[in-house]
Figure (cartoon, rainbow, N blue to C red):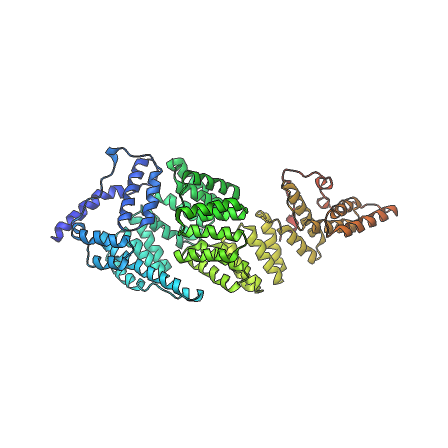
Amino acid sequence: MAAGASMVQVAVTAAVAPVLSTNSDFSDLREIKKQLLLIAGLTRERGLLHSSKWSAELAFSLPALPLAELQPPPPVTEEDAQDMDAYTLAKAYFDVKEYDRAAHFLHGCNSKKAYFLYMYSRYLSGEKKKDDETVDSLGPLEKGQVKNEALRELRVELSKKHQARELDGFGLYLYGVVLRKLDLVKEAIDVFVEATHVLPLHWGAWLELCNLITDKEMLKFLSLPDTWMKEFFLAHIYTELQLIEEALQKYQNLIDVGFSKSSYIVSQIAVAYHNIRDIDKALSIFNELRKQDPYRIENMDTFSNLLYVRSMKSELSYLAHNLCEIDKYRVETCCVIGNYYSLRSQHEKAALYFQRALKLNPRYLGAWTLMGHEYMEMKNTSAAIQAYRHAIEVNKRDYRAWYGLGQTYEILKMPFYCLYYYRRAHQLRPNDSRMLVALGECYEKLNQLVEAKKCYWRAYAVGDVEKMALVKLAKLHEQLTESEQAAQCYIKYIQDIYSCGEIVEHLEESTAFRYLAQYYFKCKLWDEASTCAQKCCAFNDTREEGKALLRQILQLRNQGETSTTEVPAPFFLPASLSANNTPTRRVSPLNLSSVTP
C-alpha cells in the first residue's frame, strides 16, 4: 500500500511541478497567470489568506485566460484521499478561528496539506492566546513578557522533519516563521531562502525573508532562486531599505512587462514616494488608486499620513468616514481616525484609536510609532519610549521609531542616549536632512563642534528639508569666531530661501540679515551693509538695530569714510537680494569647499 501511495505522490508532483517552476523572465504572461492562479488556490487551502489574496490580485491584473488554457486542479494523492474527511472538517474549524479544535482532528494525518494545517493551527492557537494575554495585560512593560508557548514544541517537531527532508515549501515557510519568532534570525533566513527555492511562487516566504534583511550588504550574500518572483521581492526590499530609486526602477520595469493594472504595484509606488517625502506625487497616486479600487483599505493609513502632513482636514475626515463605512474594525481604519484626531489636536482620542488598532493587531508597526508620537504630544515620555521600543521590536528598520526615541531622550536631557538613537535613524535614512540636523544639535550639546559642523554641512548637501542646516552651521562658525565662514553660510541661506520661489516665513531670516549687516559694516562695505540693514528694518526683532546701523553708516559716509574692496568676491550680497525682486529659479551654489568640515 505504501509503495502505491508513493507512486501516486510522484505522479502528482510530476503533474504540478511544471506549473510551479518559474522562469526568470516575463516573456510568457499566460504561464505566469496560470502559476498565480494555482498558488492562490494552494495557499487558500492551507489558510494562508494574505498570500492567496496577493497572488489573486496579481493574477487579476493580467489578461483573462481562454477556457482551453485554464489549469485543472492538482490531482488528489492516496494520502490526501485518506485525510480528506479530517482535513475538510478541520479546515471548517480553522476558517472560524477554532484552531485547537482544528489541530485535534488533524492529529495523525500524513498528507503534506493536512500536516501543514495541523502545525499551522497549533502555531496560530499559540499566537491567539498570546495576543489575548497581551490585550489583558495591565501595562506596556508586561506586553514584552508574553510568549507563544507552542513555539518550542513546534520547533522540535519541524526540525526533525527538516533534517529528514520531509518538509515541502509550505512546511519550510512555517518552520522559518517559528524560528523567527524564537529570535533565531540566522537559521530563519536560511530556511526562508530554502523555502523560496522549493516553492518560489509563495509570496509569504519572500515577505518573511524581507522582514529579516537589515541592509543591502546582507541582501547581496543571499542565494536566491532565479525567478520572476525575485523581481517583486527585490522591489519590495528596496522600498523597505529606503533604496527608493532602485525600488521605483523595479516597479517601473514590472509595469512595462504587463503588470500596469496591478493595484499592489501602484500602492507600493505611492508608498515609495511617501518614503522620500515627495508628498504631491504620493498623494496623486493614492487618489488614482482610490478611484481604481475604492474599497481598498491596505496602505490607507500611509495615505492618511500624507494628508496629515499637508493638514488636509476635510480630505482626512472624508477618508476616515469612508473607511468606517467599509470596515471600522480594521487596523488601518483605526490609524486613519487616530491621525484625524491628532490633526485636530485631540491627542487623547488619537492615542485611544491607536490603542484600538494595536488590540486588533499588536504587531502593527505604524500604530506603535503613531502612538509614540501622540504620547510625545501629551508629554508622557515614558509611555512614548515604550511605544517606540515596541515599534522597533516589530521592525528594526523603522527609522521613525529610532528618531522618536532620540527626540524623547532629548526632552529628558539625555544627550548620549539621544545621540545613539539619532545615529541609528541616520543609518537607516542617510540622505534625510532631519536626522543629520538632529545629530548636529546633539553633538553641539555635547560640545563636539567639529562633528556638529560635519552633520550640518551634510544635511545641507543632501537637500535640507527644513532649511535650517545652514543657519545652524553659521551660528557654529559665529561661536567659533569664524566670521567669514559664518557670513558665507548666511549668504547661501538667504540665496536659498529667496530662490525657491515660495513665499514662506523663515524665522531666521532676520538673524541672517543682522549678522551680514554687522559683518559688512566691519569690512567697511557700506553699500552691502546698508542693504542688509534696510532688510533688517522689515523684521520686528531687528528693526531698531537696522535703523541704528543705517544711522552709523550715514554718519561715517558724511565723515568721508570710503568703502573697502579687499574682501573676496563670494562674500558680496547677491544683486538679486539688494533689489526687491525674488528670482524664481534656484541659483547655483556658492563654492563652500573651503569650509567643508
